[in-house]
Length: 96
Image (cartoon, rainbow, N blue to C red; front, side, top):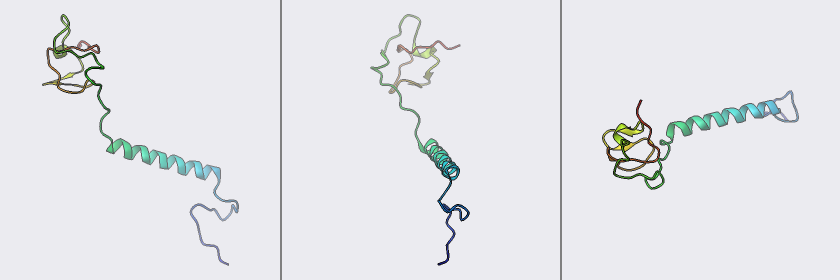
C-alpha cells in the first residue's frame, strides 16, 4: 500500500508530528486568531455613568470641559453616554 503525503505527518518520523511542529502550528493559529479578533472587535466597552460617579455639575474648578478624557462635543473616552462639558466624574484628569 502506497503512503499518501500528509501535512501533519513527516515520513521520516513514523510516530506522527513532532512536538516542535505542533507548537509552531499552534502559535501560528493563535497569532492569526488574535489578528482576526483585533481587526473585527469593537473598541473596549465604556464604564457606566453611575460606576464613574458622574454628575451633571462641576466639582469646583474640575469639569469635563477641562478633563483630558473629554471629547467634544459631548462624550468621554472612559464614561458611556452623553457627557456635559460642565459635568464631573471621579476619573477627572486635568488637561496638560
